[in-house]
Amino acid sequence: MLKNPAGLLALGVLAIATIVMVFFVMPRISADKQPLGAAINEAGKQVEQAVAEGGKAAQELVDQTKPQEQPAPAQTAQAPAAASTAPAATAAPTVAGNVPTFDVLRVEPDGSTVIAGRAEPGTTLEVADKNSVLAKADVASGGEFAAILDKPLPPGDHELVLKVTGKDGKTVVSEEVATISVPAVKGGELLAMVTKPGEASRLIATPATGGDKAAKTERVVLPVETKTPETTSKSAAPEVATATPNAGGTATKADGAGQKPDIQVTAVEIEGDRLFVAGIAKPQAKLRGYADDAVIGNAQAAANGHFVIEGKLPLSVGDHRIAVDQIGPDGKALLRVAVPFNRPAGDQVAAVASPAISSATTTLTPIDGGAFDRLRNQVARAHEILTGLYANGATPTAEQLAAARSATSIALKSLTEYRLPADASAEARRIAEMTMAQATAALKALEALPRDVADFGKGLGEIHMIIASAIGPVVDTPPSQQATAPAEVAASTPSSEARTIEQAPLTKSDNASVIIRRGDTLWQISRRVYGQGVRYTTIYLANEDQITNPDLIQPGQVFGVPDKARPDAEELHRKRLQQEKS
Image 1 (cartoon, one colour):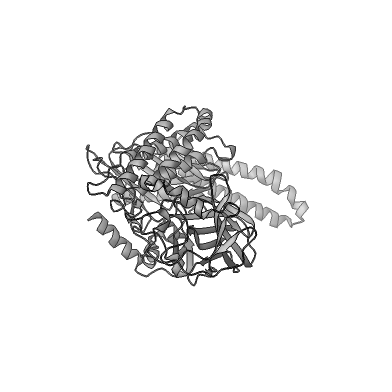
Image 2: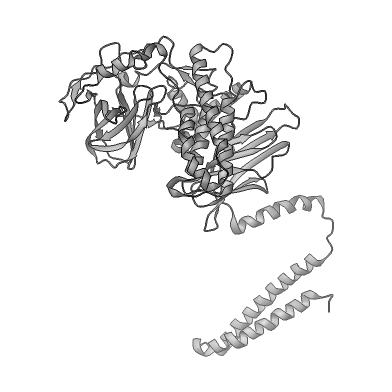
């Protein structure tokens, strides 16, 4: 009996099928008013099918109990394929919706890894290397996550992907793959890349093993010959007609030939009910934007004077008035620029200033070919994720806090260890030294905070401004200019009301335009517009006069976006990668 389990199982299935026929099928004969013969035939078919399936299942059970024979080479090769494809039939991961992305990837020479990024809020994220799950993290309500690998990556090559599982049980995998090569010997080359199937790789910053140079980034400085922050432009400002003063303001023309206005609007962009206003002002100036009489939002100009003010403010189709105020220490407007704006129909529209205005930008010079801002931007991203964990009264888990805190600490430490090349200018050294001093203070303050989640949240506000100083504008007024600064402010600030500059109307862009915001990359814009990030070279070449380094673009810049990607966009990207490696 024990030698024929398949037969026993088949008999058992037959008995069960007979019971089903007697107690369930036969009583339905009268209810369905079928002929007796048809009902019996139908019941017989069900029994036959049950026996067949039961026999098949029994045979599979017997096969599993048999001693395993050594399969032929061809069978061995096919077995893993069958095993790997079987789960896909039941729960294949999908690549749709808000796919998880890498924002911060920090890999130390010993394999210690910190990853932060964005994914679908409320999901559980896994960091996986092939079939091994290396870390798990909960995605915050704002979509941010941070994860520290439980163990350092061993020497060798690794391919990390991000997987999120929603409450409905569906799994979404990242399109991007982090390819990491951990050196086997001390001092070996550490490599980290983010790739997408079928596309060229893009390099990710890794710690400098020698300590002399970090990953290539960009930092900009004002030219040494610049006399005051507001006179850095080399191009003349356009002549703007005088308009009727608005309530309480004095309308004037833009400053005379050879100068540019102290504040100007270069573009307005609309995405649904979100409004973005880009422009140029004095470095570090505090600004407030308006659409008609409604406040859009507040912003602070960067070191190069560029700013972006954004807010949620639906605008109807038709004529509007966009204004930006420069705000003084007392909260009152020192200066205003106003520009007419005709809002066209559509959910994705942009209007730009005349070429003369948009070209009147500060001349900028990169430091070290650009070896600074990527480090600073890594601090900004890590800090944003850290503060986002406590946004809207949320309380992160201990694991989330540990990962985000570690990412911020590593990014700050990398910034403090940055070293300028020997031929750097005095102005570049002054800016770098200021930033590194601020980063050192921020790192010390961060390390002093308690480990407890609640206590850390209470102290987070104390280091917020310190970190903001390290990642924010660092251009200050040289000592030779400090004496004249108050007089200049007083001369341009009437005691009664703020002076208003009336700017020529914005015009709808012939080509699609985009205002660069903090955290934007050409890769992301290209993926949104053309479907693939690798086609970013199309945007880069169309705006080459504004872009010094395609890996770093400045918030507040306005780029034209061609309707179609260049046919050779991917090939140009590959050539650029080869040039960087050589």
